[in-house]
Amino acid sequence: MRRYPPERIVCLTEETVETLYLLGEQDRIVGVSGYAVRPPRVRREKPRVSAFTSADIPKILALEPDLVLAFSDLQAGITADLARAGLAVHLFNQRDLAGILAMIRTLGALVGAGDRAEALAWGYEERLAQVAAEAGGRPRTRVYFEEWDEPLISGIGWVSELVRIAGGEDVFPERAGRAAAVDRIVSPEDVIAAAPELILASWCGKKVVPARIAGRPGWAAIPAVAQGRIVEIKSPLILQPGPAALTDGLDAIRQALGTPVTSGEGDERKGRSMP
Image (cartoon, rainbow, N blue to C red; front, side):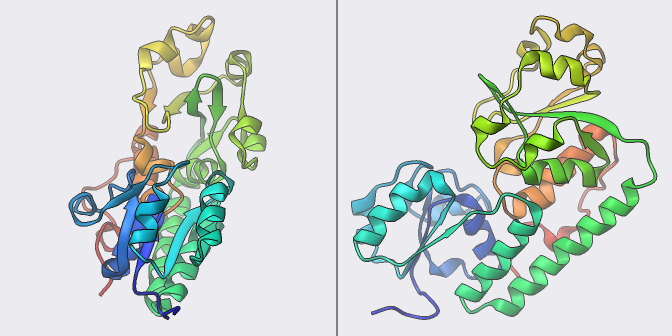
């Protein structure tokens, strides 16, 4: 029998986990992705049932969830298996800031916390607008965001938008709107020609090695390399399309751009459950 709001939820990606905690609805979660790290206590509180493109289907079924939350075409096979097994599945597919905010509101509605979700999303919208306004009058820094190194993959939509909000200028904005990573592949020559003044890198779960980036043939002439401006942003902060990107991810970009970020700034939107 289906229950509303769902009492037992499995989250196959980390952004829905963090959102449910922020909404104070974490007790509904009975299983999470192995990549879920926000808030830190999720690692000891919730059983891990999946990676990203693979999942322990028998373990998920044994948890008897009322709802499974998934993300993107990369999890379509998993969700199809779960649907065939009789489970209710909601697959999100947000690729930009508007989509992230819509995910928060939709998830709130799914668990009967629509008002709290609206307040959470509105708080993020307000701060994004505030940060954008503060950056509006300053010269923009040309930024290359590297999501992967073999091949080179430039930043996805929400990353490009956050770069601009923080005061930068994505050197490959036309690629950012392409959902598939294969459509955001750039050549080393493309990056050299774009002449970024700052390189941000987040290699999707793999540690970034700035010296490897700086040592690529011909890259010594890139302003960012010549000035030593190669900065890693940890994947959990920027590559999950949810609250982390809107908070600590945005702040990491601002710091890399040289914008002072006050300790504790915006605590009302970071890591705490809504009342």
